[in-house]
Length: 464
Image 1: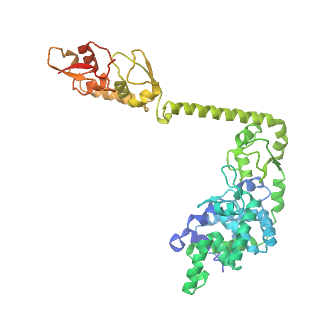
Image 2: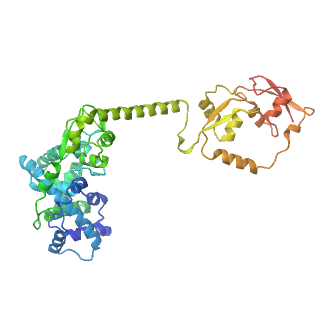
Image 3: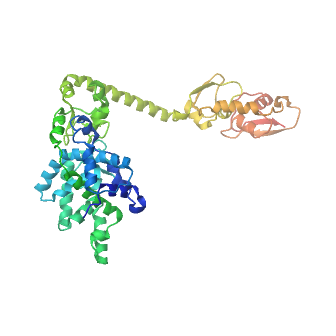
């Protein structure tokens, strides 16, 4: 298939009304390439990442000149980085492809799918250099768990990807176009398209959707870009830098935080160097993918191992303590304190749970839970713990200050008419007082010569 050329392809990316190219194609370019490898080889790769090569390539392609030059420069820089990384990864891909008799051009798939970035994760749960799905990874024996994602390990993920390509090659009788389409999208999608094209009497190329066509154009572009012109091979540059790192194994699980703290390592750089280990914890029993760190730190590890593991013990103990504290909070019904505050309140004469709950804007049931109160009994002088929302009590006080003064209910005397009221289970003086406008819990206590302690069935006089 003839390539549209770099600028026309980028134009296709930006003018969505023409091509409607979604993020799954732009994703690998926008995510850039494996920046960790490029950063540690920055000095040695200056000539390899020469923008003049990009300019000459564009000239050769007779590309469209009306496209914004800043967009061209941005993508040129990324494509140059990926081209440099191809010197490291392509020998591995070529050797493995040759060993199973597959076409050499399949090595360009990770170029366009991930930008040769093992950390890259796209939509639909695809990850790693080859953007393998979870299903394909598990089918060919890769481990994908909360701690390890072998799709991000170059060697073994390549084995799984090539196993899938070999399967597809057999399924489609060596039809490279169908194999590529099935790998990029899915075997089910490719088969449906093939059936539809056969039914219409057209070729696969003629029946392609715009997205499929864009993928194939990008693959053609990648091949032309890598093979155009001449430049120094960066393989030995990468090997020289990687030789500064050493494999290391642990006798027990250890965290990135412990290694970074005790060995004085940059945690972000350490994570970048080990894409398959994507959890905070590095498992000790796992040996599928080596864990690497700078040689000088690896040599220092044995002497500092006890300190690292001691740090890890303290870290785990702190986590367990925090969990226990959280469990205790949950048991006591203590809420998330993000938008709440801790307060204490000393019970005064006439207080009941309902009036206190109202004052602080909390529920009576929560007030009981927080203070392990059974029933409605509280005592003068008792200290209660509360967790109101921030600002609730201030708002309550402000509201109280704005309220019109009520009639002096204490002036009501027992000389008027009254009714007898039988206390129901679960009721407090405050709840009863709320049923009679102008009556307070203090009134009921005065009229009946009682304190706040009442019982179900007790008859109270309520004056009108």
